[in-house]
Image (cartoon, rainbow, N blue to C red):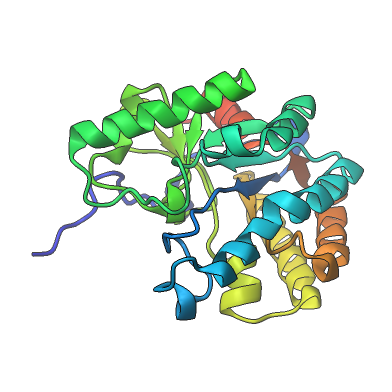
Length: 290
């Protein structure tokens, strides 16, 4: 049986009211930093499928565990260099296991979004009450650890059930990143819940692992993306550039120079407002549109 999407309506970008960003900027830019925990005996969002049936899966676990041990600290140096406050897509299981990462983000004023409990547990085939309890626990854990209200959400693996949006809104979440179908925020049909742009295309896992592209390819893609979005927004309708990063991918030593180059280009682009996902949602909601 087939089902059409009911979460949002079709409204082409050519038929919307103008969308402005602060100081006349054309492109709102944020870094979506995936800070995740994995379990050694569960596949979850495994990067290499060849060993997922093994317990322990030392290949996948070790590869991804490089992120919180080493990669994120390298990324943080690059973010600090360019004055970037990350929008942290946080597995709540990170809070108890890697508290130094939480401390580093709190000190820097990062935005915190819910990203499930771990990337080994996806939001699939859950009873409504069970899912509601899991969402509530994730949000409460992150808020206790960071001291900040969680306003945004991205499911592990960008996975939802049909109940997820309503359950998120009921828990006070204001926007989701799971539906990577636009260059602008838009209201969903769940009252009080926005969809904000995220990307499976401009995502370091897809670029480097799935497609096997190189550091220079990454820099060119980011440059081309921001240049085109700025051109698209010349009619007064602003766009969003979301850069999806993972510490075990762009936190690798040999990719650091390319992450640095890409971010330097974006944050110094005259059309760019470098910000966070929370700030994008705030501005979208605060500015009247016809």
